[in-house]
Length: 269
Ligand SMILES: [Fe+2]
Image (cartoon, rainbow, N blue to C red; front, side):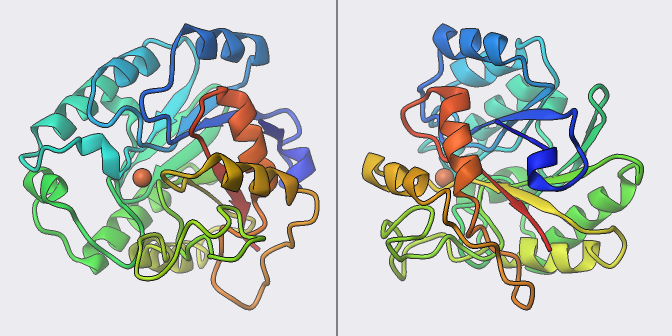
């Protein structure tokens, strides 16, 4: 959890907890921790429980403002889309994939990117196609932009995504260390990158994106935490990146106390 002032976005009074890549590891102890932390809102970035309904149901019962986007594991091993449907039903309007969720209080506009992504280019898995139908990269980007356009301009805007627009890198110093190697996933969601470019024409910077990296080894998480103090800010001349976000990664691990979690926030410049 990190306050907005330290991120330089003028949200000194806003405290956001981030949880992601839970993969079944969420129970009453996490909820007690949340109670102690008392964040203004909880953002959940997917891969909750590999298709089981328990965690979506628990999240939906939490007594605090919450927005969620599902990840690639949330369809389980069910290509029919029925498992994914159950997850969405359990979350109700808390799920904001391709949509807008305004949290009042505390006063935060959350726009969801494409749900179910495993990262890397543009791909809809079979469960997503069964549920949402065939969709092009352009159509997906348009949905994200439309949701952002509908957001109250008076509210700070958060883009919520399971995977980032430009990948997490594959070097030791990157947030997930060397877990990612070509041609594996998470090399940036092109529809999200396109949407961000378009949204930025209409809303002031900074922008944020929250993303996770799946199946992160504990060594990689420790590497991310260790590099938090020295992680460089993303360069202004290149597309937005999740690099330089390890501080929030470390905070997310703390906020959830789950064993497999790597939520990230990137201030877009
Ligand atoms: Fe994932």
